[in-house]
Length: 245
Image (cartoon, rainbow, N blue to C red):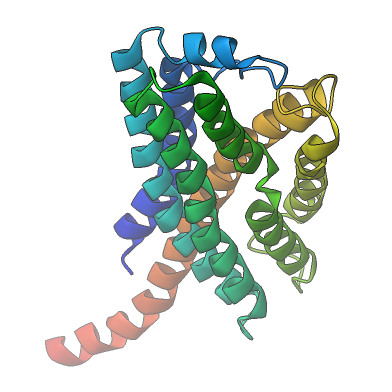
């Protein structure tokens, strides 16, 4: 893979974070609906600016695709720092599963926006089917952060490709995703699907991870390109001298 392609793949993380959250805003699900909404409230939510909501969902689906190249380039660099490939494969599986974990609830939101005038109880059931996996889908992201975190901390040498603090950052970020898994027990409060811990803390940690990881990758790509260029220079010099002779 060329250096330019690696940079494009890395930037896709920031593209995802921006397009996805803009899509949520347009779709009317940021801030999130309340689990306590009655069926008529749910219908009203999805009958307000329907075309704008559909545009937001469309952007969310586009954004999901950007996580695939981002996960791919992460795996390329995990393979550099951990050549046996275990962490690289784990991260790649998490990234691939994460695309599905984003798309499935987004399809449910799309179904709500497609027929917002359906019977209220059915609309509420679809709403639950969307929000529960949307907030509760921490396992793929946890796989990614754990793989990156442990691979980073296991690097040898005085000048690691990924800084050591980045390993701890990934482990703590993975820990912050866990409150999203508790929403089945709560319909209000911090652990509800619209709560401070289950949604807002996870959303901020999730978005920040893409941005921070993108910046770390860009630094690693720049360093790797410089090292490869430096390694190639001595080999080119004798060939040039021979040709001159």
